[in-house]
Image (cartoon, rainbow, N blue to C red; front, side, top):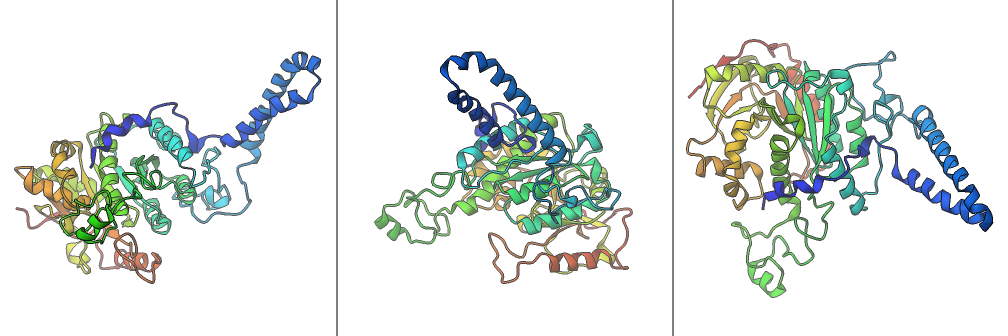
Length: 449
């Protein structure tokens, strides 16, 4: 189920920086221009004009690139409200807010692809995954110290409104420039790509899950035409003769690709970051896992680093640091800087998890336990690993006053009439800005086991 690491070779090939590359459609038009022009000439003139046409093509192409670089950064002339920045320009706006809706900060074109063009999407994401292009290193350097850098990995689907709020919260975070942000996508979406490419306050990289239901709509790991309906009874499934009729899950449901993809993507993403990114080959520091509908406090990085530095003293056996909680109410004045340690539980401690390659090696040793566990939730599968495969289990060091918040009112598991993120974000900010909320300071330890 989860051996998607075996497909890493699919990311091979030419490492074109396609998101930062000239649109190939222009180049194809130019290529077609030469034989068309030659065909219009008399036969005896074609050989003598061949060299002229080649040079003309070169000059025409160079002229196109020059115009594109200096005059084509704004394709439609209208501002895009999807950018965020903590480094304002002279007009106190980020570059993307000024109308570079189809350009990155360096003026490179962002390739737009029809979401239904599966072949092209697969080609592009394989090249991007192989290229490992990190943006904004010219602004913040190329050093990724295990002691100083926190790698932040965000699993992204298609909820751009929530992702905007998360990125906005990143832009206000203390010391965010020292981090490396990795966004792992399972949907190719032009609006999301534009939003991500407006980031100018942190180094970031985009990776793409190559076995998504978008790129495999009619075959595994997507939904095959002859798969059994999710909620059909086993007897009816046998009558239908559908492919997986003998294998409902423990709840009597048949596989639904949109749910199982979340677990597949989570495993692939973690394995990619810890074992298949050259830039992080020697990185031994913290990796913080978030999702598109999370929101962070301004001090989440200093708090995380302080907890990590205190872990050897407070909880040397703790594998995970957790910055989030699902409690509906909490006393920030009392608990804002208190931590506790306990055995990791999926329903309580799966938000804002940070851990190192050391824990991932242990989990990889239990990959069969994770992948074969009959549940599509990655967190329940990880808890199964903790309880059944790791003798010592998994322990967590938890921040009682959360620094990561869940703002997703709607998604795969939840449907509401009002899916606006703004109201939830306002509630979070009201808590964080309350006079009773203590400022960042020394961590106090309570409830250590």
